Image 1 (cartoon, helix red, strand yellow):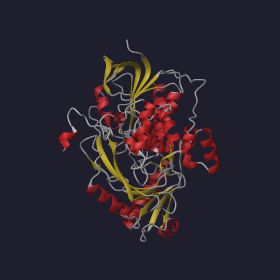
Image 2 (cartoon, rainbow, N blue to C red):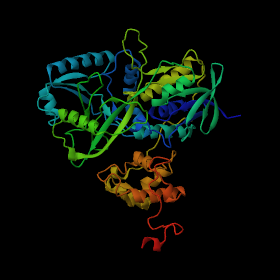
Image 3 (cartoon, helix red, strand yellow):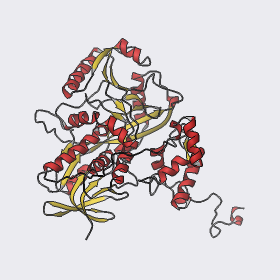
Length: 505
């Protein structure tokens, strides 16, 4: 008989990891499964890193309710989990009287949602705050509670804190089906075997529709992936006057192509929003980059193509669920429910923007739903909400750096020169509560390989370190899991049975 868990969470993106973290507060046996080789490799690994103030979502929708609930959670949560967070505020810029009318609609919506301090400022005031903005800006919506975060760090930190509090994490473990007794879920089937449970939480992101359909829930609900492409600018070449978030006025396609600062010092431009057929299609296209560039230039004309050091694409889980508020004509809301026709399922679907922002509030909603369903939730007396971050060498002053190197000389060896990432940091992440055992896992945790050379300098040394610490051959080290190996064989390792010196003459 498989082990019986109280709760199995399907998917370790930002939502699944937050659910695991908050549920770990209670006396429950919890299993968190993730089909990829690391947490946060889906939508959580490729987005704008914006924590939204809450004026965009329609009042009464799940998006609005969880967005506003989470806005006030993030400052404390960032302290508990040891992750960076900056409440820098954000702007929506108008360049015509038609745009101003849109700002007024957003202002009214934000006020209905309870966004504090939201106001419309003049074009002159906008140019004074950000001189790089286009000179014909006529007004802007200002929301002081808008913020920038780090979705990679947040996902890892939440999952680590869950593991520290007793949650079992299985990576490289793909959901295949539910185990059912009539209409009751009694377990899940995976590529690594069957696991029994009393409750399953569907936090499968882009694949949440397929998961719920396996339980016979919401057959009409479909997630259509919407691809967003981005470019990253070299922080040595371009900076906004103050790190902040600048949106255009939104359209029917979404919030639009933004220009924003990041916690890592770079400026990000994007995304566009185009529906694609495949949930694996993260292609960066020539047309898409051109669209992004034109959109970014409309806000900040001084950005130049030569500033680009990286480009990437992510997918949003755009669903067709109606709002629970019958007065709203809105068919792209979050699903947060325990379905009536199936026992033992907490169903989360269509978690697109502002999903990163809303994730901790969604987790609390899951706990609320379980309580309403009769689950007796008993708090652990020893639950620890604190996850102490590991040292980041470049963030320390000279005295702190010297003390760290004296304690562990590995922190004195720079591996990534662009971002000043040390061997000590890499080793700490390889041996962390959730081990970083691929290049990209280390990249998401330490920021190595993200600078001007994009890993050209550090990759060989990182592969060497991973191989030594994991007890693997260098040829077995991957970028992001099986099929992404860096190396085929040592350069001079010629197989004599097939290729001789004479054959080369």
